[in-house]
Image 1 (cartoon, helix red, strand yellow):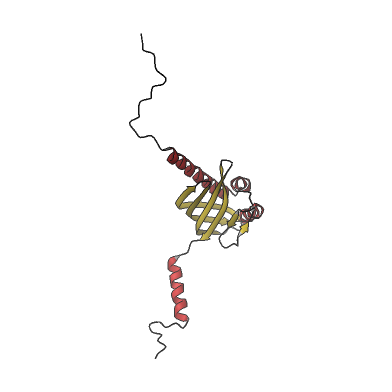
Image 2: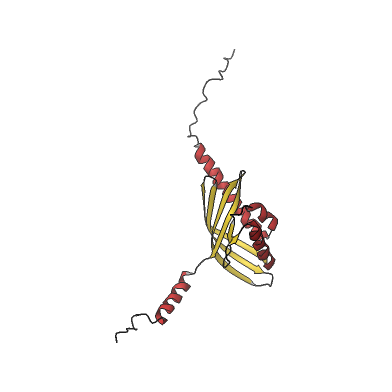
Length: 181
């Protein structure tokens, strides 16, 4: 006869340490934010305003800054900005690099560099590099975008040359331009 099992006995301790619940939860939320961020870029690439609409917060504090644009405030105006962009772009491809995701409570942010290839509806092709910050808030268990801020990535070499030329032509005291002569 077998011995009856005592349901109150502790289970054997696994040889590997148990995952800390806080760390597991944070890891899960980091993954969920990363998925939300990828969904944003998929909707952008597909030029799909309905998918974009599901990603964005509808709150009045939602904000968007496209490269070279002024601040766009509130979902209705943000939506219209995407409609305008989608209308003028026939194809857009992203390569995301240096993606960094952080989560703190119900707020998360993603910083990244996006290398973009764009074909306009006029058939023009061009490449751009932008530095982006996306901020998400958790609403009803879903991460929604409340801020997208994207700025052109500065070419350090080109800027240095322009700054040098500006400095040299501005009448500043430079070697070879000694005003004490």
